[in-house]
Length: 254
Image (cartoon, rainbow, N blue to C red; front, side, top):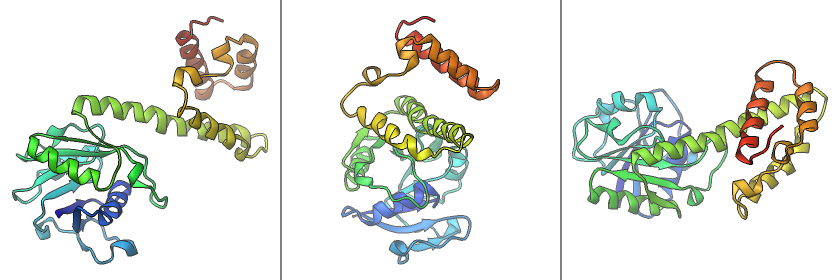
C-alpha cells in the first residue's frame, strides 16, 4: 500500500482525499490544514493536523494548495525520504525544487465544495523527475482514475490554459447569460437544454464541426441586432471580439 499525506483541504484536497480513501492501492494517513476544519464523516477516522512538525512518515506528500504558495510551503516540509507532489495545472514541477524527489499529480477537473465528483472519470496528469517515482504515481493514479497520462510541465501549462477556456470562461458566459435573461424576467433554465446539447455534441463532433450561430453563418443583420441590445460596456466588447474571432476562423466577413 502507498501511504499518503494530503496537505491542504480546499476543494481539490477534499475531493482527492475522498478518492484516495476509496483506493485499494493507497492508505490515507493524515490530512493537514492550517486552519481549523471538520473532516467529512467518510474521513473522520483520518488524523487531522495543523502543525507540519506533526507530519507522519509517508511515501507521498500531496500538496493541494494554491499555485502561488506551493514553492514556499514545500520548503517548510520537514526533511524525509519521500516523494513530494503538487496538484497544480500551471505550476512547474520545479516549484518543488527543494526536494530531490518531486512530481505533479494534476486532476483535470473543476471541483466545488458541496458537489460530488466521480473521480474514476477525472483525467489525472502526472509528471516525476525520475522513472521510479513516475511508476509509483502511475500506480496511485490508476487506483482512483481510469484516465491517467504522463505530461511534462510545458504541455501541462498549455493544457491548463485550455481548461480555463472550456471551464472558467465558459462558466462566466453562463453568468452573463443569466444576467441578460433576468433583466427580462426570464428563467435561466430555458437555456439549460441548449447548454447540455452544446456540451454533448463534442462527444461526436470536433469543436470546429459543432460551431453554429450568426458569426459562423456570417449573419450581419443578427449580429448588428445583438450589438444594439448590448449597451456600451464589457459585454458588448466581449461579443464583438468573440464574433470577430469566429468570423476569422471560418473565413467570413461582415
